[in-house]
Length: 511
Image (tube, rainbow, N blue to C red; front, top):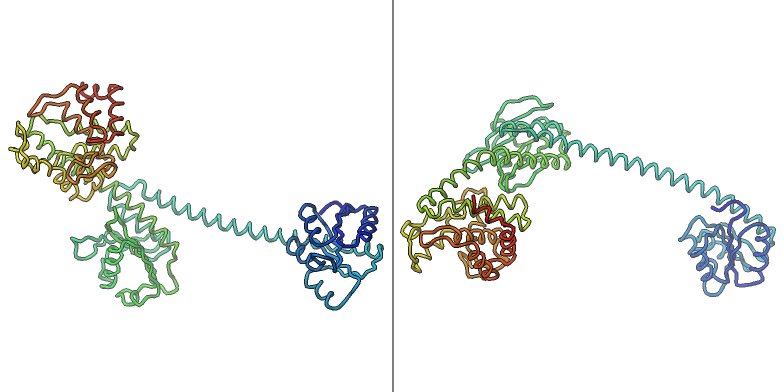
Protein backbone atom coordinates (compact mmCIF):
# COMPACT_ATOMS: atom_id res chain seq x y z
CA UNK A 1 0.00 0.00 0.00
CA UNK A 2 1.17 3.55 -0.68
CA UNK A 3 2.14 5.98 2.10
CA UNK A 4 -0.85 7.22 4.17
CA UNK A 5 -2.37 10.34 2.57
CA UNK A 6 -0.98 9.37 -0.83
CA UNK A 7 -3.49 6.64 -1.65
CA UNK A 8 -4.87 6.47 -5.17
CA UNK A 9 -8.64 6.59 -5.68
CA UNK A 10 -10.32 5.71 -8.97
CA UNK A 11 -13.67 7.44 -9.67
CA UNK A 12 -15.85 5.91 -12.40
CA UNK A 13 -18.94 7.76 -13.61
CA UNK A 14 -20.46 8.70 -16.95
CA UNK A 15 -21.20 12.23 -15.67
CA UNK A 16 -18.11 14.38 -16.19
CA UNK A 17 -19.27 17.00 -13.69
CA UNK A 18 -19.26 14.45 -10.88
CA UNK A 19 -15.76 13.33 -11.88
CA UNK A 20 -14.53 16.93 -11.93
CA UNK A 21 -15.98 17.83 -8.52
CA UNK A 22 -14.94 14.66 -6.68
CA UNK A 23 -11.56 14.67 -8.36
CA UNK A 24 -10.81 18.23 -7.34
CA UNK A 25 -12.05 17.68 -3.76
CA UNK A 26 -9.97 14.58 -3.04
CA UNK A 27 -6.86 15.94 -4.75
CA UNK A 28 -7.12 18.86 -2.37
CA UNK A 29 -7.30 16.37 0.51
CA UNK A 30 -3.97 14.89 -0.58
CA UNK A 31 -5.12 11.84 -2.51
CA UNK A 32 -4.03 10.83 -5.99
CA UNK A 33 -7.10 10.70 -8.23
CA UNK A 34 -7.79 8.79 -11.42
CA UNK A 35 -11.04 8.97 -13.41
CA UNK A 36 -12.90 6.89 -16.00
CA UNK A 37 -16.19 7.42 -17.87
CA UNK A 38 -17.30 3.77 -17.82
CA UNK A 39 -16.31 0.26 -16.79
CA UNK A 40 -14.17 -0.45 -19.85
CA UNK A 41 -12.11 2.70 -19.36
CA UNK A 42 -11.74 1.83 -15.68
CA UNK A 43 -10.24 -1.57 -16.52
CA UNK A 44 -7.73 0.13 -18.82
CA UNK A 45 -6.73 2.45 -15.96
CA UNK A 46 -6.41 -0.52 -13.58
CA UNK A 47 -4.14 -2.31 -16.04
CA UNK A 48 -1.57 0.50 -15.94
CA UNK A 49 -1.95 2.06 -12.46
CA UNK A 50 -1.94 0.89 -8.87
CA UNK A 51 -5.31 1.74 -7.30
CA UNK A 52 -6.13 1.59 -3.58
CA UNK A 53 -9.90 2.23 -3.78
CA UNK A 54 -12.60 2.55 -6.46
CA UNK A 55 -15.85 4.56 -6.40
CA UNK A 56 -18.17 3.65 -9.26
CA UNK A 57 -21.65 4.52 -10.48
CA UNK A 58 -23.92 1.53 -11.19
CA UNK A 59 -25.69 2.62 -14.37
CA UNK A 60 -23.12 3.33 -17.11
CA UNK A 61 -22.97 2.52 -20.82
CA UNK A 62 -20.88 -0.43 -22.00
CA UNK A 63 -20.05 -1.98 -18.63
CA UNK A 64 -22.00 -1.08 -15.51
CA UNK A 65 -20.60 -0.70 -12.01
CA UNK A 66 -21.52 -4.18 -10.82
CA UNK A 67 -19.71 -5.85 -13.74
CA UNK A 68 -16.71 -3.64 -13.03
CA UNK A 69 -16.80 -4.61 -9.34
CA UNK A 70 -16.74 -8.29 -10.29
CA UNK A 71 -13.75 -7.78 -12.62
CA UNK A 72 -11.87 -5.95 -9.85
CA UNK A 73 -12.69 -8.69 -7.32
CA UNK A 74 -11.33 -11.36 -9.66
CA UNK A 75 -8.15 -9.38 -10.40
CA UNK A 76 -7.29 -8.03 -6.95
CA UNK A 77 -9.43 -8.79 -3.90
CA UNK A 78 -7.54 -6.16 -1.86
CA UNK A 79 -9.07 -3.19 -3.80
CA UNK A 80 -12.26 -2.03 -2.04
CA UNK A 81 -15.14 -0.97 -4.33
CA UNK A 82 -17.82 1.55 -3.28
CA UNK A 83 -20.97 1.75 -5.46
CA UNK A 84 -22.94 4.97 -5.99
CA UNK A 85 -26.42 5.08 -7.49
CA UNK A 86 -29.30 7.49 -7.82
CA UNK A 87 -31.83 4.62 -8.11
CA UNK A 88 -31.43 2.41 -5.06
CA UNK A 89 -33.27 -0.90 -4.95
CA UNK A 90 -33.17 -4.15 -3.00
CA UNK A 91 -32.01 -5.95 -6.12
CA UNK A 92 -29.04 -3.59 -6.56
CA UNK A 93 -28.15 -3.88 -2.89
CA UNK A 94 -28.06 -7.68 -3.02
CA UNK A 95 -26.03 -7.58 -6.25
CA UNK A 96 -23.41 -5.35 -4.66
CA UNK A 97 -22.96 -7.84 -1.81
CA UNK A 98 -22.61 -10.66 -4.33
CA UNK A 99 -19.89 -8.77 -6.19
CA UNK A 100 -17.85 -8.02 -3.07
CA UNK A 101 -18.72 -4.28 -2.86
CA UNK A 102 -17.74 -2.83 0.55
CA UNK A 103 -20.25 0.09 0.66
CA UNK A 104 -23.33 1.41 -1.11
CA UNK A 105 -23.90 5.21 -1.37
CA UNK A 106 -27.03 6.90 -2.65
CA UNK A 107 -26.77 9.92 -4.96
CA UNK A 108 -26.58 12.80 -4.57
CA UNK A 109 -23.62 11.96 -2.32
CA UNK A 110 -22.17 14.70 -0.17
CA UNK A 111 -18.42 15.09 -0.46
CA UNK A 112 -18.01 14.98 3.33
CA UNK A 113 -19.92 11.69 3.38
CA UNK A 114 -17.64 10.32 0.67
CA UNK A 115 -14.60 11.39 2.68
CA UNK A 116 -15.86 9.59 5.79
CA UNK A 117 -16.46 6.52 3.63
CA UNK A 118 -12.92 6.77 2.22
CA UNK A 119 -11.37 6.99 5.70
CA UNK A 120 -13.32 3.98 6.93
CA UNK A 121 -12.56 1.96 3.81
CA UNK A 122 -8.83 2.58 4.08
CA UNK A 123 -8.80 1.64 7.78
CA UNK A 124 -10.55 -1.62 6.98
CA UNK A 125 -8.28 -2.20 3.98
CA UNK A 126 -5.23 -1.76 6.16
CA UNK A 127 -6.52 -4.41 8.58
CA UNK A 128 -7.41 -6.67 5.66
CA UNK A 129 -3.91 -6.38 4.18
CA UNK A 130 -2.32 -7.09 7.55
CA UNK A 131 -4.46 -10.21 7.88
CA UNK A 132 -3.59 -11.16 4.33
CA UNK A 133 0.13 -10.76 5.01
CA UNK A 134 -0.24 -12.76 8.22
CA UNK A 135 -2.04 -15.50 6.35
CA UNK A 136 0.71 -15.55 3.72
CA UNK A 137 3.32 -15.63 6.47
CA UNK A 138 1.59 -18.64 8.04
CA UNK A 139 1.27 -20.26 4.64
CA UNK A 140 4.96 -19.57 3.96
CA UNK A 141 5.91 -21.04 7.32
CA UNK A 142 3.87 -24.16 6.61
CA UNK A 143 5.45 -24.40 3.17
CA UNK A 144 8.88 -23.99 4.70
CA UNK A 145 8.15 -26.73 7.22
CA UNK A 146 6.92 -28.95 4.39
CA UNK A 147 10.04 -28.25 2.32
CA UNK A 148 12.22 -28.88 5.36
CA UNK A 149 10.52 -32.23 5.98
CA UNK A 150 10.97 -33.08 2.29
CA UNK A 151 14.63 -32.08 2.47
CA UNK A 152 15.17 -34.20 5.58
CA UNK A 153 13.57 -37.12 3.74
CA UNK A 154 15.84 -36.64 0.73
CA UNK A 155 18.91 -36.38 2.98
CA UNK A 156 17.90 -39.64 4.67
CA UNK A 157 17.39 -41.19 1.24
CA UNK A 158 20.83 -40.01 0.13
CA UNK A 159 22.39 -41.34 3.34
CA UNK A 160 20.85 -44.74 2.69
CA UNK A 161 22.16 -44.76 -0.90
CA UNK A 162 25.64 -43.71 0.25
CA UNK A 163 25.58 -46.35 2.97
CA UNK A 164 24.67 -49.02 0.43
CA UNK A 165 27.49 -47.94 -1.89
CA UNK A 166 29.99 -47.84 0.98
CA UNK A 167 28.88 -51.29 2.16
CA UNK A 168 29.74 -52.85 -1.20
CA UNK A 169 32.77 -50.79 -2.22
CA UNK A 170 35.44 -52.87 -0.44
CA UNK A 171 34.02 -56.39 -0.88
CA UNK A 172 36.47 -58.86 -2.43
CA UNK A 173 34.61 -62.19 -2.51
CA UNK A 174 31.21 -63.49 -3.57
CA UNK A 175 30.56 -65.07 -0.18
CA UNK A 176 31.20 -61.77 1.60
CA UNK A 177 29.02 -59.93 -0.90
CA UNK A 178 25.95 -62.17 -0.38
CA UNK A 179 26.32 -61.90 3.40
CA UNK A 180 26.55 -58.11 3.17
CA UNK A 181 23.39 -58.04 1.03
CA UNK A 182 21.33 -59.76 3.74
CA UNK A 183 22.83 -57.60 6.51
CA UNK A 184 22.11 -54.39 4.61
CA UNK A 185 18.55 -55.51 3.83
CA UNK A 186 17.81 -55.99 7.55
CA UNK A 187 19.53 -52.71 8.43
CA UNK A 188 17.68 -50.63 5.81
CA UNK A 189 14.17 -52.04 6.26
CA UNK A 190 14.15 -53.16 9.92
CA UNK A 191 13.14 -56.63 8.73
CA UNK A 192 13.18 -59.69 10.98
CA UNK A 193 15.26 -61.69 8.56
CA UNK A 194 16.82 -61.64 5.11
CA UNK A 195 18.14 -64.57 3.08
CA UNK A 196 19.92 -64.83 -0.26
CA UNK A 197 19.22 -67.81 -2.52
CA UNK A 198 21.26 -68.78 -5.58
CA UNK A 199 19.00 -69.67 -8.49
CA UNK A 200 20.43 -71.74 -11.34
CA UNK A 201 19.09 -73.95 -14.09
CA UNK A 202 21.67 -76.56 -13.12
CA UNK A 203 20.48 -76.68 -9.47
CA UNK A 204 17.14 -78.35 -8.74
CA UNK A 205 16.36 -76.25 -5.60
CA UNK A 206 17.31 -72.60 -4.89
CA UNK A 207 20.43 -72.76 -2.72
CA UNK A 208 20.69 -70.55 0.36
CA UNK A 209 24.03 -68.71 0.45
CA UNK A 210 23.60 -66.21 3.33
CA UNK A 211 21.14 -65.26 6.08
CA UNK A 212 20.83 -62.46 8.65
CA UNK A 213 18.29 -61.99 11.47
CA UNK A 214 16.90 -58.93 13.22
CA UNK A 215 19.45 -56.30 14.25
CA UNK A 216 22.07 -58.00 12.11
CA UNK A 217 22.18 -61.17 14.22
CA UNK A 218 23.54 -64.28 12.57
CA UNK A 219 21.01 -67.05 11.92
CA UNK A 220 21.27 -70.59 10.61
CA UNK A 221 21.11 -71.40 6.92
CA UNK A 222 17.87 -73.38 6.96
CA UNK A 223 17.35 -73.39 3.22
CA UNK A 224 13.72 -73.73 2.19
CA UNK A 225 12.85 -76.42 4.74
CA UNK A 226 11.24 -74.06 7.26
CA UNK A 227 9.04 -72.39 4.64
CA UNK A 228 7.83 -75.12 2.31
CA UNK A 229 7.37 -75.31 -1.44
CA UNK A 230 5.38 -72.10 -1.79
CA UNK A 231 8.43 -69.92 -1.07
CA UNK A 232 10.46 -71.88 -3.62
CA UNK A 233 7.76 -71.19 -6.19
CA UNK A 234 7.88 -67.45 -5.36
CA UNK A 235 11.68 -67.38 -5.67
CA UNK A 236 11.57 -69.10 -9.05
CA UNK A 237 8.86 -66.72 -10.32
CA UNK A 238 10.86 -63.63 -9.33
CA UNK A 239 14.09 -65.06 -10.80
CA UNK A 240 12.36 -65.87 -14.07
CA UNK A 241 10.50 -62.56 -14.43
CA UNK A 242 13.39 -60.43 -13.10
CA UNK A 243 11.02 -58.01 -11.33
CA UNK A 244 11.09 -57.08 -7.61
CA UNK A 245 7.94 -58.29 -5.83
CA UNK A 246 6.22 -57.07 -2.64
CA UNK A 247 3.59 -59.32 -1.04
CA UNK A 248 1.64 -58.45 2.11
CA UNK A 249 -1.40 -60.02 3.81
CA UNK A 250 -1.54 -62.76 1.17
CA UNK A 251 -2.89 -66.28 1.47
CA UNK A 252 0.32 -67.42 -0.24
CA UNK A 253 2.29 -66.16 2.76
CA UNK A 254 -0.08 -67.70 5.30
CA UNK A 255 0.27 -71.10 3.60
CA UNK A 256 4.04 -71.19 4.26
CA UNK A 257 5.34 -73.63 6.88
CA UNK A 258 6.62 -70.53 8.72
CA UNK A 259 3.94 -67.91 7.94
CA UNK A 260 5.00 -64.38 6.96
CA UNK A 261 3.05 -61.13 7.14
CA UNK A 262 5.03 -59.26 4.47
CA UNK A 263 7.90 -60.21 2.14
CA UNK A 264 10.02 -58.55 -0.53
CA UNK A 265 11.74 -60.69 -3.14
CA UNK A 266 14.34 -58.91 -5.28
CA UNK A 267 16.31 -60.59 -8.10
CA UNK A 268 20.05 -60.06 -8.41
CA UNK A 269 20.70 -59.95 -12.13
CA UNK A 270 23.85 -59.92 -14.20
CA UNK A 271 23.33 -58.91 -17.82
CA UNK A 272 19.57 -59.50 -17.57
CA UNK A 273 19.99 -63.02 -16.18
CA UNK A 274 19.08 -63.80 -12.57
CA UNK A 275 21.89 -65.15 -10.42
CA UNK A 276 19.85 -65.24 -7.22
CA UNK A 277 16.99 -63.75 -5.20
CA UNK A 278 17.14 -61.73 -1.97
CA UNK A 279 14.19 -62.65 0.31
CA UNK A 280 13.48 -60.16 3.13
CA UNK A 281 10.51 -60.69 5.45
CA UNK A 282 8.37 -59.52 8.37
CA UNK A 283 6.79 -62.36 10.34
CA UNK A 284 4.74 -60.34 12.86
CA UNK A 285 1.25 -59.10 12.04
CA UNK A 286 1.01 -55.35 11.68
CA UNK A 287 4.44 -54.98 10.09
CA UNK A 288 4.78 -54.64 6.35
CA UNK A 289 7.17 -53.26 3.75
CA UNK A 290 6.66 -50.08 1.72
CA UNK A 291 7.35 -49.27 -1.92
CA UNK A 292 10.37 -47.28 -0.70
CA UNK A 293 11.75 -50.46 0.91
CA UNK A 294 11.43 -52.22 -2.43
CA UNK A 295 13.25 -49.34 -4.13
CA UNK A 296 16.11 -49.42 -1.61
CA UNK A 297 16.50 -53.20 -1.86
CA UNK A 298 16.43 -53.03 -5.67
CA UNK A 299 19.13 -50.36 -5.66
CA UNK A 300 21.20 -52.50 -3.30
CA UNK A 301 20.95 -55.64 -5.46
CA UNK A 302 21.93 -53.61 -8.53
CA UNK A 303 25.02 -52.42 -6.69
CA UNK A 304 25.71 -55.97 -5.52
CA UNK A 305 25.33 -57.26 -9.09
CA UNK A 306 27.99 -54.83 -10.27
CA UNK A 307 30.32 -56.12 -7.60
CA UNK A 308 29.61 -59.73 -8.53
CA UNK A 309 30.72 -58.95 -12.06
CA UNK A 310 33.79 -57.09 -10.83
CA UNK A 311 34.80 -59.66 -8.24
CA UNK A 312 33.83 -63.00 -9.73
CA UNK A 313 33.29 -62.44 -13.41
CA UNK A 314 35.98 -60.07 -14.60
CA UNK A 315 38.75 -61.02 -12.20
CA UNK A 316 38.37 -64.78 -12.43
CA UNK A 317 36.19 -66.00 -15.29
CA UNK A 318 37.21 -63.30 -17.78
CA UNK A 319 40.95 -63.78 -17.31
CA UNK A 320 40.75 -67.57 -17.45
CA UNK A 321 38.51 -67.70 -20.51
CA UNK A 322 40.42 -65.02 -22.37
CA UNK A 323 43.66 -66.91 -21.75
CA UNK A 324 42.06 -70.08 -23.07
CA UNK A 325 40.75 -68.37 -26.20
CA UNK A 326 44.10 -66.68 -26.80
CA UNK A 327 45.72 -70.11 -26.63
CA UNK A 328 43.36 -71.23 -29.41
CA UNK A 329 44.41 -68.26 -31.55
CA UNK A 330 48.08 -69.03 -30.96
CA UNK A 331 47.40 -72.61 -31.99
CA UNK A 332 45.86 -71.36 -35.24
CA UNK A 333 48.77 -69.00 -35.94
CA UNK A 334 51.31 -71.70 -35.07
CA UNK A 335 49.98 -73.71 -37.99
CA UNK A 336 51.22 -70.96 -40.29
CA UNK A 337 54.50 -69.23 -39.44
CA UNK A 338 53.64 -66.47 -41.89
CA UNK A 339 50.68 -65.31 -39.81
CA UNK A 340 52.39 -65.58 -36.41
CA UNK A 341 51.35 -62.63 -34.16
CA UNK A 342 48.91 -61.42 -36.83
CA UNK A 343 46.01 -61.14 -34.37
CA UNK A 344 48.02 -59.11 -31.86
CA UNK A 345 49.13 -56.71 -34.57
CA UNK A 346 45.54 -56.32 -35.83
CA UNK A 347 44.43 -55.46 -32.30
CA UNK A 348 47.17 -52.84 -31.96
CA UNK A 349 46.33 -51.22 -35.32
CA UNK A 350 42.62 -51.27 -34.47
CA UNK A 351 43.33 -49.47 -31.19
CA UNK A 352 45.38 -46.83 -33.06
CA UNK A 353 42.50 -46.25 -35.48
CA UNK A 354 39.90 -46.29 -32.69
CA UNK A 355 41.87 -43.71 -30.73
CA UNK A 356 42.10 -41.51 -33.82
CA UNK A 357 38.32 -41.80 -34.23
CA UNK A 358 37.67 -40.80 -30.60
CA UNK A 359 36.49 -44.18 -29.33
CA UNK A 360 35.82 -44.54 -25.61
CA UNK A 361 37.99 -46.69 -23.34
CA UNK A 362 35.26 -49.33 -23.34
CA UNK A 363 35.21 -49.39 -27.15
CA UNK A 364 39.01 -49.66 -27.26
CA UNK A 365 38.81 -52.61 -24.86
CA UNK A 366 36.28 -54.26 -27.17
CA UNK A 367 38.59 -53.66 -30.15
CA UNK A 368 41.53 -55.15 -28.25
CA UNK A 369 39.53 -58.27 -27.35
CA UNK A 370 37.93 -58.71 -30.79
CA UNK A 371 41.21 -57.94 -32.58
CA UNK A 372 43.15 -60.61 -30.70
CA UNK A 373 40.43 -63.21 -31.26
CA UNK A 374 39.06 -62.18 -34.66
CA UNK A 375 40.54 -65.22 -36.45
CA UNK A 376 39.78 -67.81 -33.76
CA UNK A 377 37.21 -69.32 -36.12
CA UNK A 378 40.03 -70.52 -38.39
CA UNK A 379 40.58 -73.32 -35.90
CA UNK A 380 37.64 -74.96 -37.70
CA UNK A 381 39.25 -74.68 -41.18
CA UNK A 382 41.32 -77.59 -42.56
CA UNK A 383 45.07 -77.01 -42.99
CA UNK A 384 44.83 -77.96 -46.65
CA UNK A 385 42.73 -74.84 -47.21
CA UNK A 386 44.16 -72.55 -44.55
CA UNK A 387 47.82 -73.13 -45.54
CA UNK A 388 47.35 -73.50 -49.29
CA UNK A 389 50.11 -71.43 -50.98
CA UNK A 390 48.24 -70.94 -54.23
CA UNK A 391 44.89 -69.50 -55.23
CA UNK A 392 41.84 -71.00 -53.50
CA UNK A 393 39.05 -72.60 -55.47
CA UNK A 394 35.55 -71.21 -55.15
CA UNK A 395 34.60 -74.10 -52.88
CA UNK A 396 37.68 -73.57 -50.69
CA UNK A 397 36.99 -69.86 -50.43
CA UNK A 398 33.44 -70.60 -49.29
CA UNK A 399 34.92 -72.69 -46.47
CA UNK A 400 37.30 -69.86 -45.51
CA UNK A 401 34.30 -67.49 -45.39
CA UNK A 402 32.85 -69.58 -42.55
CA UNK A 403 35.54 -68.57 -40.06
CA UNK A 404 33.87 -65.32 -38.85
CA UNK A 405 30.69 -67.22 -37.95
CA UNK A 406 32.68 -70.01 -36.31
CA UNK A 407 34.70 -67.51 -34.27
CA UNK A 408 31.63 -65.52 -33.20
CA UNK A 409 29.87 -68.71 -32.14
CA UNK A 410 32.87 -69.84 -30.04
CA UNK A 411 33.03 -66.52 -28.20
CA UNK A 412 29.26 -66.09 -28.04
CA UNK A 413 28.71 -69.50 -26.43
CA UNK A 414 30.41 -68.19 -23.28
CA UNK A 415 27.65 -65.61 -22.76
CA UNK A 416 30.04 -62.87 -21.68
CA UNK A 417 31.12 -61.09 -24.84
CA UNK A 418 28.08 -60.58 -27.06
CA UNK A 419 29.36 -57.27 -28.46
CA UNK A 420 32.81 -58.69 -29.12
CA UNK A 421 31.27 -61.71 -30.85
CA UNK A 422 29.33 -59.36 -33.13
CA UNK A 423 32.55 -57.57 -34.14
CA UNK A 424 34.26 -60.89 -34.89
CA UNK A 425 31.30 -62.04 -36.97
CA UNK A 426 31.28 -58.95 -39.19
CA UNK A 427 34.96 -57.99 -39.62
CA UNK A 428 34.90 -59.26 -43.24
CA UNK A 429 31.81 -57.28 -44.29
CA UNK A 430 32.37 -54.65 -47.02
CA UNK A 431 31.03 -51.10 -46.96
CA UNK A 432 29.42 -51.69 -50.40
CA UNK A 433 27.57 -54.79 -49.15
CA UNK A 434 29.70 -57.30 -51.09
CA UNK A 435 31.33 -58.83 -48.01
CA UNK A 436 30.52 -61.83 -45.83
CA UNK A 437 29.00 -63.59 -43.93
CA UNK A 438 25.76 -61.53 -44.14
CA UNK A 439 26.47 -58.95 -46.85
CA UNK A 440 25.77 -55.98 -44.58
CA UNK A 441 26.14 -52.54 -46.15
CA UNK A 442 27.36 -49.17 -44.82
CA UNK A 443 26.37 -48.20 -41.30
CA UNK A 444 24.48 -51.50 -40.90
CA UNK A 445 27.94 -52.96 -40.23
CA UNK A 446 28.88 -52.45 -36.56
CA UNK A 447 31.18 -49.43 -36.29
CA UNK A 448 33.94 -51.29 -34.46
CA UNK A 449 33.79 -54.06 -37.07
CA UNK A 450 34.45 -51.41 -39.75
CA UNK A 451 37.55 -50.34 -37.82
CA UNK A 452 38.72 -53.93 -37.40
CA UNK A 453 38.22 -54.54 -41.12
CA UNK A 454 40.77 -51.84 -42.05
CA UNK A 455 43.22 -53.04 -39.37
CA UNK A 456 42.92 -56.65 -40.58
CA UNK A 457 43.41 -55.68 -44.24
CA UNK A 458 46.41 -53.51 -43.36
CA UNK A 459 48.26 -56.28 -41.53
CA UNK A 460 47.34 -58.87 -44.15
CA UNK A 461 49.05 -56.72 -46.82
CA UNK A 462 51.88 -55.37 -44.66
CA UNK A 463 53.12 -58.80 -43.47
CA UNK A 464 54.47 -61.91 -45.19
CA UNK A 465 51.89 -64.50 -46.27
CA UNK A 466 52.22 -68.04 -47.57
CA UNK A 467 51.45 -66.90 -51.10
CA UNK A 468 53.37 -63.56 -51.29
CA UNK A 469 55.84 -61.22 -49.60
CA UNK A 470 54.67 -58.20 -47.59
CA UNK A 471 53.88 -54.97 -49.43
CA UNK A 472 55.57 -51.60 -48.76
CA UNK A 473 53.56 -49.16 -46.66
CA UNK A 474 52.92 -46.70 -49.52
CA UNK A 475 51.36 -49.43 -51.65
CA UNK A 476 49.24 -50.71 -48.74
CA UNK A 477 48.07 -47.15 -48.08
CA UNK A 478 47.16 -46.61 -51.73
CA UNK A 479 45.06 -49.80 -51.78
CA UNK A 480 43.24 -48.83 -48.58
CA UNK A 481 42.68 -45.28 -49.87
CA UNK A 482 41.23 -46.63 -53.12
CA UNK A 483 38.95 -48.96 -51.16
CA UNK A 484 37.18 -46.11 -49.35
CA UNK A 485 33.44 -46.32 -49.94
CA UNK A 486 33.71 -49.80 -51.47
CA UNK A 487 35.52 -52.20 -49.16
CA UNK A 488 36.06 -49.75 -46.31
CA UNK A 489 34.21 -47.07 -44.39
CA UNK A 490 35.55 -43.70 -45.71
CA UNK A 491 35.59 -42.30 -42.20
CA UNK A 492 37.84 -45.12 -40.98
CA UNK A 493 40.06 -44.71 -44.04
CA UNK A 494 40.52 -41.02 -43.20
CA UNK A 495 41.55 -42.02 -39.68
CA UNK A 496 44.02 -44.54 -41.15
CA UNK A 497 45.55 -41.86 -43.40
CA UNK A 498 45.95 -39.53 -40.41
CA UNK A 499 47.73 -42.28 -38.47
CA UNK A 500 50.03 -42.91 -41.45
CA UNK A 501 50.85 -39.19 -41.74
CA UNK A 502 51.80 -39.00 -38.06
CA UNK A 503 54.05 -42.06 -38.35
CA UNK A 504 52.01 -44.22 -36.00
CA UNK A 505 52.11 -47.29 -38.23
CA UNK A 506 55.85 -46.94 -38.91
CA UNK A 507 56.45 -47.01 -35.17
CA UNK A 508 54.33 -50.15 -34.93
CA UNK A 509 56.10 -51.91 -37.81
CA UNK A 510 59.50 -51.04 -36.34
CA UNK A 511 58.83 -53.03 -33.15
